[in-house]
Length: 359
Image 1 (cartoon, helix red, strand yellow):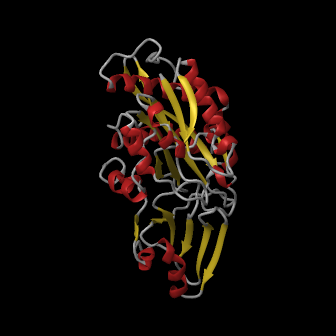
Image 2 (image 1 turned 30 degrees about the horizontal axis):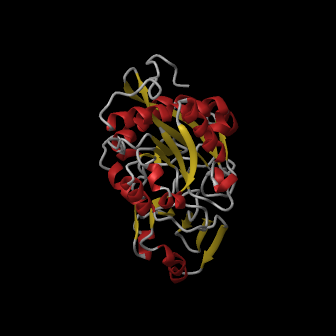
Image 3 (image 1 turned 90 degrees about the vertical axis):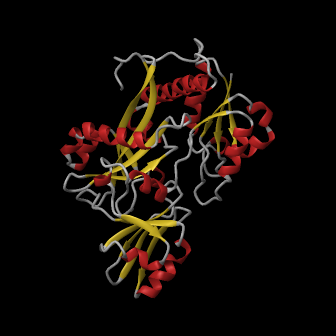
């Protein structure tokens, strides 16, 4: 069987423009270990190689490049479907669509910050809070995320679409509204929470959620680590120079011992989110950004359908990172076989025993 690791070429990324070349290498190595004929494929090349994609397994890791133009994702997905490929790595709804779906789940509603669409400049004041965060409805890497102080003098601080620092002060609402004009209809407004340590260093928790084969069925695997941003930044994204630490190391660095006792609550949160977005055979992974405020309350900030893996490698090292890549492919092969209406072959499915530790 043919396997393709599908990516978007990014000019400032790694070899061949792959945003996470180490992860691409880990996935391709795992695919070859499982007996697949594996190779990388850039998104624009799909339209020239449709015949080779027929009946193939495709891991769609395409996404925006910082500062670049967004690709035509719908056209790409339509081409893959027409070729008869089995695609994993399905995109999620945009941030507003996610919020609408998540807010319907009673267990998740208490963990969602107040938010609304930014359709008119006045919407930044509609939540009735002194500070908000404006986020693009579709984006990645913390690009375009800006914190706004809504008490005069109004202030904006964050990153523009090319990840360049933004620090602006506005003397009146008219100046603030002019700054917001390009984002209207393309962004959401979210209540800003106190998610920094005593030194002003932003941090959050990243949960990597995977569906994995186990005893003939599937289970949810959750890997968690803490992302620390640079002092003064709005987000703790690794692309902005942040760091990833396992919870015990982060608890010591931040002086937050409660990080060591959060795993049961985080697992419940991850399972509830997985329940909301389950049902698509091509969805095998999710990334959850979770905030911990100074009162110890957990906040679900965002869900990613194509989560980055650099933090997992940085926090835990290559063994866990490579094991997760292989487990993802095993699940993909089982689902591929199921979609074709046949039992998986020996080389396609080697379920993880139910009693094997989850890492």
